[in-house]
Length: 103
Image (cartoon, rainbow, N blue to C red; front, side, top):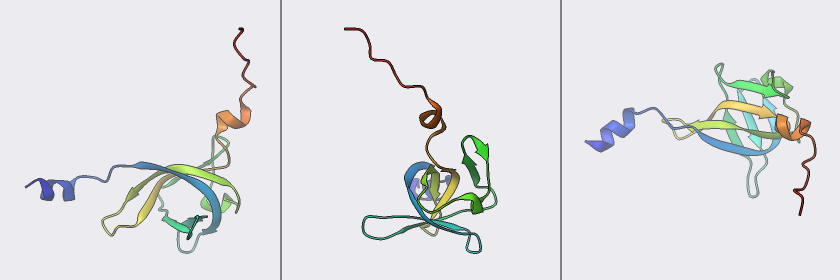
């Protein structure tokens, strides 16, 4: 009985990150560089794309960009992005240098 309940439950999102190898707007995929092989992630019309905290499009991704976001595993076993952030974290890019605590 637990197995059938797990099949109908929505997929749980999990984080991913890497370096963008390519973007394919026709196939609706992004490819991340991998140690052994590239990692292909599907995107949909519902996937949210950002860069520097602003909404962008799939085609705005550039090879070599750091990439991070959330994804789910589809019923077919494919990885599908819910969100994609191109470029470094916004806070990391704009944060002031941290001061060391006094000793």
